[in-house]
Image 1 (tube, one colour):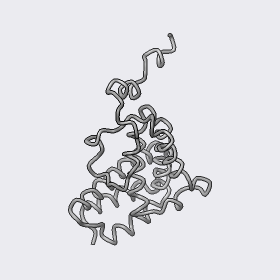
Image 2: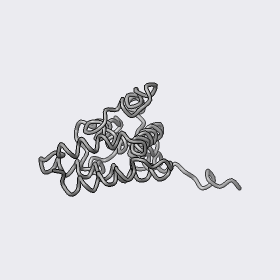
Image 3: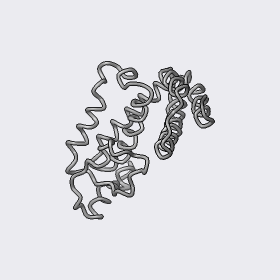
Image 4: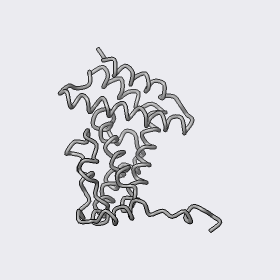
Length: 184
């Protein structure tokens, strides 16, 4: 028997399953993953697990059009932010990478929702982290979300822990108004 929080997530997944408007399913699936990860974290904290009914139904619904497309969108966002790891993208990429990991470990194997040509995307993202490790501004330990397990090693990939606050801020906030203003 599913729990009340699980039923709410299933309703969200059902409503999103057949959406074909890009912006609608993207936003909604991102919201749904927030709910899934929150419940997953709560379960871990309390030493409980998903009900088998929920896990089976959610797995089935995530495979449907709107949810599957939403998951692929999160993957592409994760990849885009990974490419910006040396600047402002690392935190966002890690967050998305962890959310994707929760989904693939609990509901849908990665290879089932990506095109065969994209099967190595997660490895490519992780390689991007490793290659940029020396230049990525480190995330202070207390800024890593409490729900992130030790197995999500990518949060701790930066190797330069001697970056000054000024250097970190310069990398994270390296935007100037003239970059955005076409009149300059």
